[in-house]
Structure formats: C-alpha cells, structure tokens
Amino acid sequence: MKILVINAGSSSLKYQLINMEDESVLAKGLCERIGVEGGNIVYKTGDGKVFKKEKFFNSHTEAFSELVELLTTGESAVVSDVSEISAVGHRVVQGAEKFSKSVIIDKEVLDAIIEVSPLAPLHNPAAVSGIKACMEVFPKDIPMVAVFDTAFHQTMPEKAYIFGIPYEYYEKYHIRRYGFHGTSHRYVSARLAENLGKPIEELKIVTCHLGNGSSIAAVDRGRSIDTSMGFTPLDGIIMGTRSGGIDPSIVTFLQEKEGLSYEEVNNILNKKSGFIGVSGISTDSRDLVNASLEGDPRAQLTCDIVRYQVKKYIGAYAAAMGGIDALAFAGGIGENSLHMRAEVCKDMEFLGIKIDPELNVKYDRTEHDISAPDARVKTWIIATNEELLIARDARDLISK
Image (cartoon, rainbow, N blue to C red; front, top):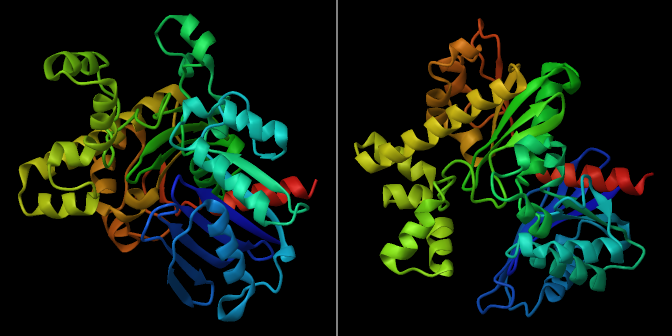
C-alpha cells in the first residue's frame, strides 16, 4: 500500500509518497510560489535522485498535475500508474470541535472544514484548495483523508480550554484553546512510549515540539490534557516571529500609543516578534546561539527567555498531571539544539529530570535517551514524523 501525504499552503504544496509495507519514503518534495512568478518544484526520490524545475503554476491543480507526471514517468518515476496510490492524506490545521480524529473526506467533511476556516484563515482555505485540486487530478476512487492538527487536543478538559472572558463568546464564536501541532505531539508521545517499552496508558509525558513554531503538551496516559498554543498558534512560548503569550492589554496599549490598526498589531505579534523581535538578529535559533556564544547580549537574552519559558511549562504540566514519567524534545530546535536541552533541564532534579551532558552532546540530532543514569524521569530526543502519522491514519481508515 502506498499513501501520498499532502500539506498545502496558500502558495505551496509539500508532499511525501510513503510505502506502508516498510514505511519508507518513495518520493518527497515541494512546489513553491503557486500563483506567483518564479515558481518551482523540488522532487526527491527515496534512492537519492533529485529533480528541480522552474515552472509557473497557476493553481494547486497544475501543481498536482506536475507531481503526478513526476511520480509516474521518466527517471523520476516511483510508481507505474497513479492508481497504485491507495489514498491521499491531507494535513488540515483547524478542525475545531467538529473533529476529534482523522476522517475520510466527503462533501460534509469538506463543508465543515470550510465552516471553521474563520478560526484558521491562513491555513484552512489553503488546505481546502489542496483537497479540491487533488480531487480534480486524481481518480475519483482514490479516497482522501483529513488529519487535523487540533484533533489530538480535543481531549482537554473544559478547565484547560475555556478562557476567562464572557462565556457567551465561547458560545457565539467558539473562542477557546484549541492547541496545534497535535499530530506531532501524538506521534512523539507514542514513539516515546514505544522506546520506553511501556504502554502509553501508564505514562505521564511532556512533549516539547520546538521549532520556528513551538508548542508544549501534557500527555496524560495517551491523552492531551493541556497545551501551550491557544485559540491560534500565537499563544505559548516565544517563537521565530511570534510573541507567544503576552498581557492582552499590550495590544490596546500599542494601538493607543502608536496609532496602530488591528492588522498592524496582528502583523507585529505574528511576524515581527519572538526571536527576531527580541534579538534584532534572526528568526533562526542557530543564529541566536552562535551570536550569544560570541557575547551578543540580546541574542543571549532571547535564548534565556525561550529556555526559561519551556522550563516553566514542563513544571506546570508536571503539576497538572500529578507527576511526570518522561520528557521528549522534538522539532527543529528540540532535536538539534544541545544548548537548549541542557539549559531547560538544568536544576530540574527536584522533578526527577536530569540529563547526561555527554549523551546530550553525543546524540545531538539523533533519536536517543539522554537521561542521566540516576534520573527518575526519562528524557529523550524524538525525531517527529507528522507525515508518517498522517499516512498511518489514512491507511487505517481505508482498511476498515
């Protein structure tokens, strides 16, 4: 069985074709600048062949047509015919309260994704475009599956997701904590339990998905009970360009003092804050670490802030779950920043968290246990794989 995994952006199309017999990647790549001049496609096969082409794609439909041609013809071919693809799994950011698990897409599901699009105006319309384009290009008998970033967090209790604003706004506009990166947190927590050789139903886990966008989740016996991102992916810890959680009065204060519109404040908080806003240097944590090691004070401050905030969430979630058995670092920063892991876990012995400095260095960028021998809590680097989990969900749904 072969599953195609799609992550459609407003002007991009990421894809992976996965052979579910051994879960190997047959092909993967990206179409960029769809609808914009200077478009291109990058296509890589599992055996290392790379194909690049500059091409203007007027729509996602044209990008899918190009992808099908690459998958099935010439030196780039990995299948003889598109009919060899058993299903297509689509990443959808916002499923709101309508979806607590992955589903096969039909008209009702597609309408529901469109209905909740106001809660994710930058993401859901793009996913809908990708789904519709895929349906146009692929044979009608190939099922489409939607996998929602928010679904895993639908197990949160009301006390974790209701905000302290008039309840009528939850009833009218569905304003609540939704959380994101759910597919990653689900994969990482399950993978960690597998590595520990224990049923996830017996474990209290904190998962840290840390990258340009970051979130932390409390996974209690396999269920998400809280997570750092909120109504939107802006909440939580500071990120590449996002502020993370701030005092809401800052918004109205800035509007009054700077004469800013809603759009201008939204742009500041989402695109000019976080790493770049505090450091003034870069949105990339690697640049900040290098600059901090060279003595740049604002780069060091930025590193200190993000590490401090991650540490606070770990402590808070351990308290919320009544303990912690395991801690996982995942994502571009979580997997690749030994400095961050070391600082976050520093002075956490009171919770049972203690990492081995040598293991932290030795297994940087590698999935491995980095716990100290006497640590009560197991700390792991886990390589997240959202695409694989989407493919597994699609396989399981069409196999029922």
